[in-house]
Length: 252
Image (cartoon, rainbow, N blue to C red; front, side, top):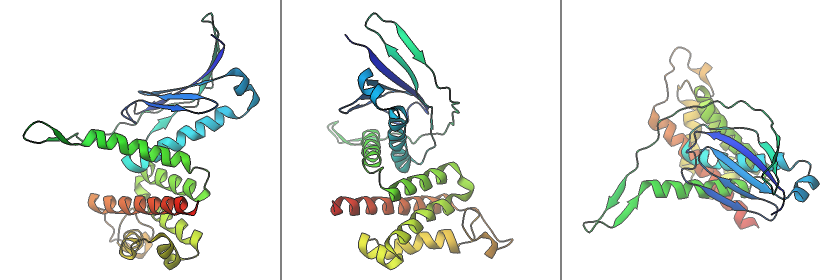
């Protein structure tokens, strides 16, 4: 047994990923569990890369942002604590303190559908967990693309700033339009539905909604967006994100 560097994070809610995730890379092994993440690294590798702690934290946070895009739920991720585990069991501990605030929200009920013989034909929890893994991996894979980073941050802001949710969701459409040089070009290149593109603009810009962008145009006549309107705006924003990821895949 050799010395091993251990990085640990805590996060909330502890069931954000719902099931454990194991990640193996050439320079580290990471396990995401219930409210806790552990990365194991060889001391030689860790000492050679001075910013490795920050790199792994950013990679981990990208995974959380990917899940958030699917679940639309806030999360809190601590900075990593670090210790070196020696073969005799001794630990050299280094702690980087970071406040952790827990935000509680109700989850969706799990639904399992079976046929008359008891065979499972639909398991909402299994499907949801697999979708979270997929979105987390996509976010990590494309986190070097500036537009992906920008869109994930806009969606994160939409989750954590609900009073301006439509403002932040519209930023996703706006950043894509600017990237491709205009609305029509973006729609054509991404093959995105024009009606859906326009619908997000209408919700964010034209409807007299308190969460929208042009509240001054409707003084005294504002209302809260309905849950259906917010769900539709979120769905279009996610579809735009997926359309751009598909564009990146086809370009490589």
